[in-house]
Image (cartoon, rainbow, N blue to C red; front, side, top):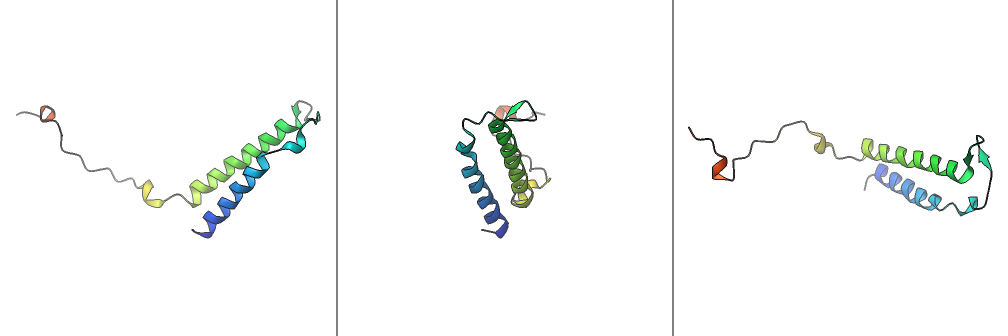
Length: 85
């Protein structure tokens, strides 16, 4: 496993544990006057997850999956699909 993949794995494991936000239970504080603090925390957590998946796609995605070469045409498997002269 590459160093980048290991770091991103550790990032997601950390996010897994941070998702369990029991410390905000029962806190009625409003962020920006409208969002409960727990919901605001989850907005930030979701943005962190989105950033993590963007990093995975940028640095850990296999290069050969993005080739733009078209696939070779396949021969028809059904004789009725063949063009007749």
